[in-house]
Image (cartoon, rainbow, N blue to C red):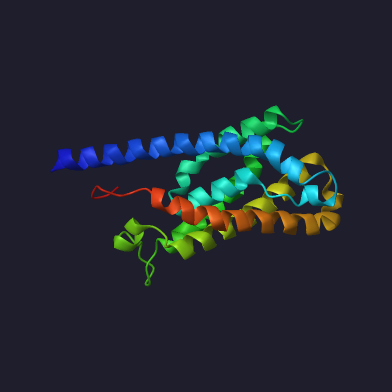
Length: 200
């Protein structure tokens, strides 16, 4: 029996590592789209600051539909890619992306608990979030993550005095990102991590 458990746990870990690699590759594609397509659709001006943040959308949607821990490599890769094409340091981009992962963790932690405060290590957790729940969790994580991203990078640039002027743009960015994540998260739900072992 122990060999079966070890085999199941090993298979789950391998699947999780594969998923982390996939979402990291998707994150690089998201950064490239952010820098090209989104920049073209939201030209310089007031709309540019209110554009959706595709790396945040991906992290929020994936973390809400699957296991949020799988998004950590994607955040690192996204930060490195963004830092490469920006004057801002990679560390600031990574710090700006972390609230999205924390929001997804927090949302999933609430979902993975059953009434009474006990961890929901049962069929409900194994199934993952329903389609509506995945959409809501993804939208919430993306909204929080997008607002935190813009706020932290504004602090990093030293333009804290611009916050009052940026509130509308931050709200627009959060709304666009939440809307896209609400669509993407349910689509990712069929790819959710399956728990086959006794503890994994």
